[in-house]
Image (cartoon, rainbow, N blue to C red):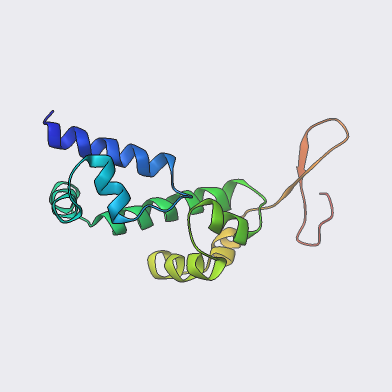
Length: 131
């Protein structure tokens, strides 16, 4: 593996572990140990998309996973995945996925869970009643 590829892989690992943080070009380039312009060019050449597009794609992938797996408000998922607001997540999500985060969650058959007395969880109906 080349030194350049190792630097870029390090940056990809940083992105994965820091999605909720500011991942601007300057920070990513500093993590790679090269200037912003050179980093952007090398990253795009190596991965086929710009660093910014890569970060957005990774944030959207994490948001999709959270929308399927957890009963958190969409605004909390937006902040947890590094979007500035629920509106910012919704705009990016709709552009990439073709639907809103709420519609995606509902269309995926997501049902929030509630603890039973025996420690197991039971899906709720749309009205919040146990099945």
